[in-house]
Length: 260
Image (cartoon, rainbow, N blue to C red; front, side):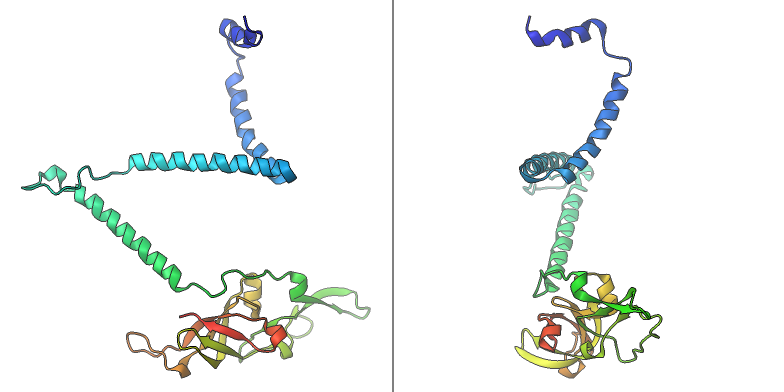
């Protein structure tokens, strides 16, 4: 008898422990947390091997799920059009195909919409908080450090009024406030000096967007009424989005490309 069969033999003769199923269930439930901890803790070559193994497992799992999904969907049996009348119980087969065509149309429209708003700079360097803000010391002995001065270009709007110094946490210097941007139209190949309307999206975070900070890759809204752009319905376009393509705090101006 082989040396390693004594465990299986004992299980056949005397059965398993009474709490075997419960212990197995708990062990499997803990396995997920154990794998998660390993993924966070493992470094170097071990981490690479573990990540490769998990990637292969997940890819196999996705393939299996996709195979099950495909087996569950309905497909038309015969694509050839048969002559003569179709029985009533076969009439809704074409509806399945029509629904599939409709979903493909919706997907195509979504892809077109995603491509329509494709920005010139898809990836930008993240700006650290230490680079974005300068600590301002306040108080008699300069021990308080709750104030921050923004070191990047900002937009505050025409009716902006600063808060009293006691309540102003973020200071936006007037020398770094901009009201105009040099916007290039990609199709006309012309550059215009346009008024800023708002800061729509800063890629570094929503806090910088609310503060009106403009860094490389920021989406801004500009006033294009003087360009004479009109919609297909004949209405004049007032505001359009543009993406900042330079570092305004270094260049002293804002260069942007219009998103058409």
